[in-house]
Image 1 (cartoon, rainbow, N blue to C red):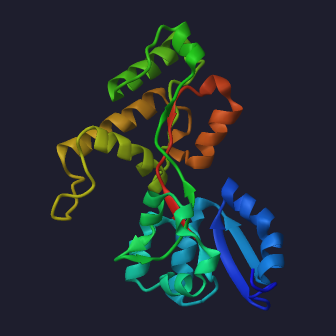
Image 2 (cartoon, rainbow, N blue to C red):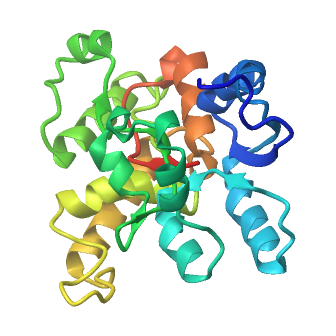
Length: 257
């Protein structure tokens, strides 16, 4: 840096969601303060509580937080309500501290509204299928290539293990957690969230089929309590109970911060 602690005396109040990236950022804060002079008051809360808390603080005009982390799908509403400010001016003024080329372009784009950048991505996920190779070999199951194959594999494993092994685990929690995974079913079955003229397409036959199939496979072959499983619940099931983890789909998201 051109000078030591160029922002000495400044203070930031930051709200983030519980995630390994938040833990990593928290550990780096002493180095950040030593280099910039900025003192950071970091508050970390469960992801499910983040949006309600932010909306309460924003709508009341409390000014409690300078920086918040949330899923980028919330960004257009925050911008429309005047709750967040673009980063364009700050990037222009302090561009030497940020190289936008460091970020995955598609994740960065999710933090833009009307060509203005409102956040920087700290979390990126991809959607994919994982399966227990040993169990697939044991029961003669081929690698799934369709939603029918996924359901058939889950059914086979549950039945042939006499229910000792759960066939599949995915996020089933109400709200954005479940929507992430269900979106794969929606798009994969020919549906969409919006029509070409920007209206809701969720009343389409394709959307109804996708929801029915998604709910069916979780109810029939998913773990107990799957309707309450978000990112953390699914991860705990995956990591702590091998016999109950066969396949799962990740979500796609980019959080701004």
